[in-house]
Image 1: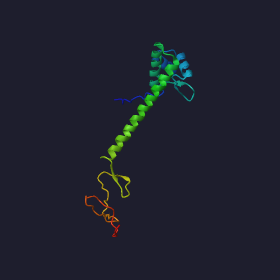
Image 2: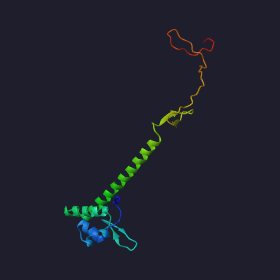
Image 3: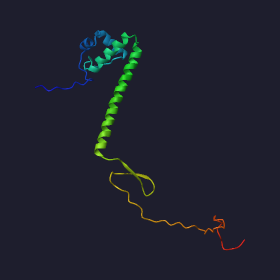
Length: 161
């Protein structure tokens, strides 16, 4: 049988007469909204307006808000913000996909350790840092004498005061 394809909501497929009928508006109203920048359709190489499913939904939303008494400048701002939210949703979805792909390619948690200089270094999962085997011995320059009360006295230099 026939293969069903999903239609892109942003594909400019409707002529102005069809978009006007689908939105319940007069074609002249659509032209006016285009001039005002409210709902701006795509154009064919010949200059004809082409509306998408998304444009038709916007036109219906404009009609609803206008009927509720909202002014055209406010409607324009609302549509602008809705478009921005839509763009951000797409961006979030893309970022989630990238994170998911990265996690699938690199299973396990990232591991950090201190390098030889004390800097933080990233390790691949399952690897270890080569440990230093040097030993440092600290010796004081002066021998501390113990006083009668058990506290450290001044260093002794071998002479008397």
